[in-house]
Image (tube, rainbow, N blue to C red):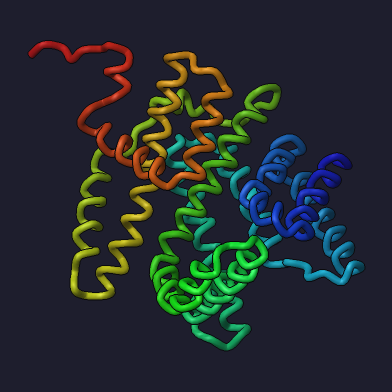
Length: 310
């Protein structure tokens, strides 16, 4: 219990106090909450989380720093929610189908709450936040000695960039929820499947495939992006973003299957995944692999299994 409180307190302090590490680490912050809710049990894990919240709030108050109450609440809800869903031992698809929308609507609820507090429309609140983020990034880029012509181009197009990200905000938010669930479930699976019962066995995830009917949703959303009606175009692009993320997961499963079959060293696997995070063309390629697997079935070809003769 004491170790749980200490780890959770330290995790939340990292998010609140370290400017560069905090935003990167925040997506994985629910993991220790998930871990201790499993290890200590739901009630003791929740008690450890509440004590950690109080300690962090007190430390931040003494330091004169903002308490980040909304962020802490979302992090806490995510960790506890994932723990409770995983204890029910659903399939991997059902786990994501329940957890991701719950996290998404939790985020939407906080946007609505802050919009009401500020007395502005929720969409306008999103727009203001995105615009402020772009301007803050400009300040950061200037300190990093980014060429002035690139900074000027961003400054001149702040309105267009803000409008673009506002339009795709729902899709990006849902993708963020899915990614948060995915990373924490995978990490939690590695931490908890040994020695602590209750964590579901999702089987060999390198064999995972997206539902075949998803391709029709991808096609329809792609057609909608070409519609002259702005609302249809906006809905289409948001659905398309989510579909691409799902096919990215399928492409990553194929890559992991290939690495396992060929016994590729961990170092080279790490370099591959690092390349994906920094190179957008690799992301597009992996999505294409995941989508084309519907017709090619890469994993069957890798294992040399042939279709039975008719």
